[in-house]
Structures are given as structure tokens and as C-alpha cells.
Length: 409
Image (tube, rainbow, N blue to C red; front, side):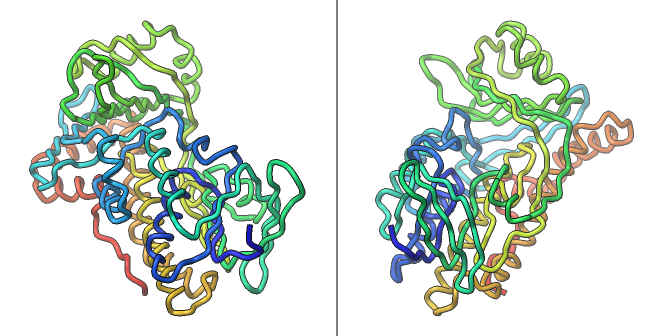
């Protein structure tokens, strides 16, 4: 342990680990001293690396390629070659094919445990990165040179260290963010997402299904076949008041209810793995930066899982921030200076606003039983599928390739 670090990353999950890898790689010629902390016994045990799966956009693949990690991640991921978006009980659908977009896949589905193996191995290999886990950050105090931290390891006395910059990547329920008095704008959807892996009769043929129902979106993402089972990752949005009852149903009744909502595009659904449910809301921090501090990932913006935009936006944020910090370091600028951090906010403002709006209004539009909105989405899906310009715009947003500013202001 050092007494001072250039950057301390609080949280070694998907976002924190990816950011630390990006920062280490980008600053290799002029290394930064980086510390990553996690409250669990090892980074492999982070709650980010659980049994869930993550949809990686084509843009996120490009980020991991630039980090030299896709060679390991690619074989562990299932490509999405087609996207099918429909509205239960109404005509109109959007079908997006990878060939029409000129790419080998529109995105990929990776199981979080596989992402964890690759990312933590990359951190182990990276130079200039120290680890402290399990450990909790008990106090963050602004100082002239950045931040002073009081760190409590799992055993022993607390440690005082300083950092030019602290990057909070400790999730949507960040205690540290609350202690710092950083307020959030929150929109509660009155929904929960039921997450599980399911098995079905027909091959998914690398199609990701997004189906909108009166209770919210329902997605089935393609996973690799396992022991002869055709598998998919289920994200089923239900009313908050109904979630616990649905979650507790016996397997046969759970699958019957799911089949009614989804239909038979994948044939008969006959198996479901461990189920979990998570409350859904849109939460956006009113401050993403302070002198010596940046919020990254869910602590900065937690999105509805519709269209799988949350992590992919966070990865774009992480890459832009890493590039800006490495450039500032090369130029001898203080990493925690507001002039440097404001460049990051300005660079990502358009991307964040567009992505948050895309997720939020899609959710509002397709979770409503309002007759006017039902007609609007009928016309909308029908129009998107027929008009090439609209379809391409929709697809590029879903792929994480929409136009955005990524240069320093």
C-alpha cells in the first residue's frame, strides 16, 4: 500500500474493473498509480460477477477490443445476429439483421461470471494497479490535492491514504455517495425485473427478442447451448405488486405464465434456473463530478434494462474518462481538477442524455395501457420497420454507435 495514489477506484465490479483496465492501458507509457478497492474477499466474488448475463453492444465489443480483451471474451460470448422487437397483442414489429448493418453481430450476451474471470485476470496482469479487498471506505474527505480516504481492511487498523482522484463505481446504492450528499433524480417505474436463465425447444438462431407487454418489457437473449438445452437469458418486467407472487410460483406455473406473455417463437419453454427480482427505476445523479471525485456506472445513472443500455453506456463513459485522464496526466494537469473533469462531463453529455431518454421513453411508451399511446407505438414500430433511415437510427442506438461527442472541449 502506498500513502498516495493518482486514482483510487472504489468498486471492482464490471464498470470499475473495466475502467481500471482502460486507464492502465491508456497510461502505459506514463504509468499512473491506481488502487482498486472492493468490500468482498476477492474481485472474483464481486456481486457484479454473479449468475446473471449482460448484453454487450457492438460498441462495447469495440471497447474491449481496444483493451486487448476481446480475444478472451469473444469465445465466451454468444453473438446477437438479429433483434426482434414486438408489442404483445398488437401488429407491427421491428426486425434488425446484422447483415443490413454490415457487422458480424449486433451485440453479444456474456454471462457475468465469464466477464469477471477475464476482467480480473486483466487487472492481475496490469502494471501499476494495487488491490485492497476486502476493504471498505469509511470516509472520503476533500483536500487541496484531491481526496483523503480512510480505508478499513477486513482485519487490522484503518489506513489513511490520499488520491488525486477518486472514482466511485460502487453501484446504484452507494453509501459513500449518500454520505457526500450527492442527490439523485429518481423516477420509479413501479416494476421489478425477474431475472433467470430459461431453456426452450427451438434454437434461438442468435435472435434477441424484446417483447413489450402491458406490464412492461420482456426480453429473451441468446445464450450458448448447454448439455443439449437451447438457453436464453430472461429479463421479465412485471408490476412491483405482482413480482413476489410470480417469483414464488412452482416452475411449471411460472413457465406457463411466461409462455402466455412471450408466445411460442422459441417453442415450448420447459426449464428455468435460479430466479431473482430487482426493483426498477431511473436514477440520475445531479452531480457526476466534484473536485477530486467522479461517479461512474450505476452510481451516476441507473437505467431500466430495456434495450440493455445501462452497462454499455457506462463502458463508453469509462473509456472516455480514461482517455481524458491519461492525456491530462501526460500534460501535467491535476487529475482531480474541475477543468479536467468538466471536459469529461461535456464529452459524454450528449451520449448520456440520448441513451437515458431512449431507455426511459421506450419504457414509458411500451408499459402504458393508454389507448393513444397504444396507437402511437403501433404506428411507431410499423414505421421503424418500413423506413430505412428510422430503422438505422434505432439500430445504431441499440448497438451503442449513435453519434456522440468524445473529444475534449
